[in-house]
Image 1 (cartoon, rainbow, N blue to C red):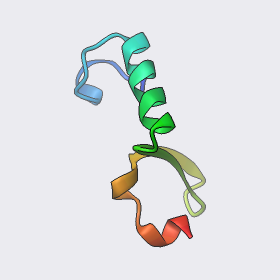
Image 2: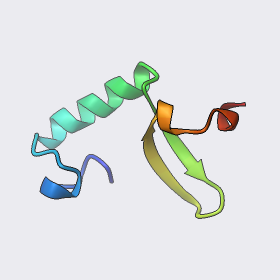
Image 3: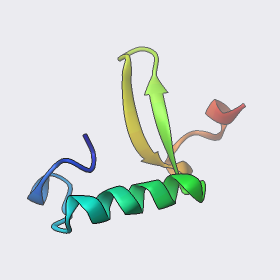
Length: 57
């Protein structure tokens, strides 16, 4: 969902292929995480520094 949004939805006008590459690199470097919220039953792509540290325990 994050990489398939076009234009101003995510502020990134680069190609989808480039956005996928950036996300994969951020995930592999540990700069981003996929966060699953039990309450809403939804996943989010988040920068690691934005996730509360206690959720990593």
